[in-house]
Length: 193
Image 1 (cartoon, rainbow, N blue to C red):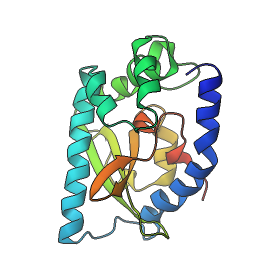
Image 2: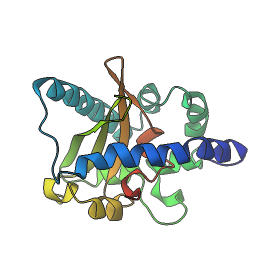
Image 3: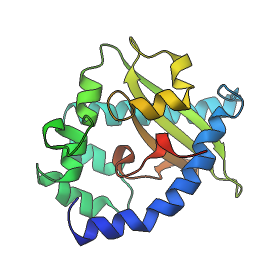
């Protein structure tokens, strides 16, 4: 996104988001493997995985209306405008690698080039105030093993070209996004220890 709106939007959540996501996401790695979910946790992770199925199809179909339904409420209006501009940073990030400045591939390219699209819902644990976090990872199952998904280094190195992610939290029994669409404008997978 360009201009003043992008700068204020980036600044308002970057510091808190990095701190929050470092705690929540990397709690997943502390034991070296995913937490063994209880029956209730399985249900919650299945619900998050279902969201992953819906939004991945929306990206593949360039269905912006569906994506906006899962967007953060405070960003929805601004993102709706951005998605109408095929040269906006958000549109390029989601759908068109050709207009991404610097390195990286669009979410669409990552998903559509996967021979076997994998969607992994990761339980990122709870914050100190009891809020539960989850992470959706989108990747090529034929090329990336579950073992590699446990490597912070691998996730950081390949989030720009092979892996898409999106961070959620549980609010009143429902998953809501913590970050912008598909972790746009964040470095969730590369947060410091």
